[in-house]
Length: 102
Image (tube, rainbow, N blue to C red; front, side, top):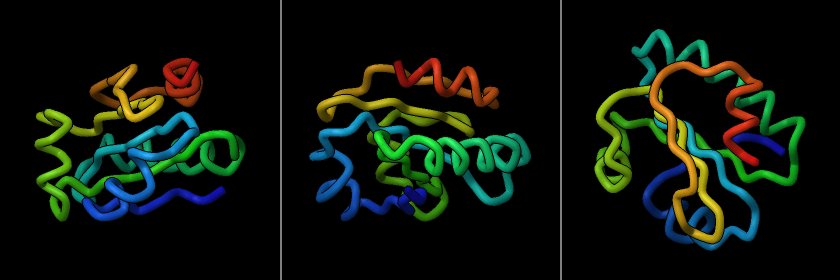
């Protein structure tokens, strides 16, 4: 499965209602650590179709960033049944990200 480019509309219609575990990657194009995490998030999406994986650009989606209290990027958020169950700020290894999903 590919990574979903999440906008406010997509969040309301697809992400919040998903019955899958959701991984959201809050990033910006200019952010160095975000560019390190991005390919790992892409791999997780490809290798784990049981997850819904989305990326949220904080520069183009500031309302979503504010809704999740994102103060620093990259921020990774895991949701189950529409609720936040895990959150991490800063670059993480693929193994650490997968562990957050459990």
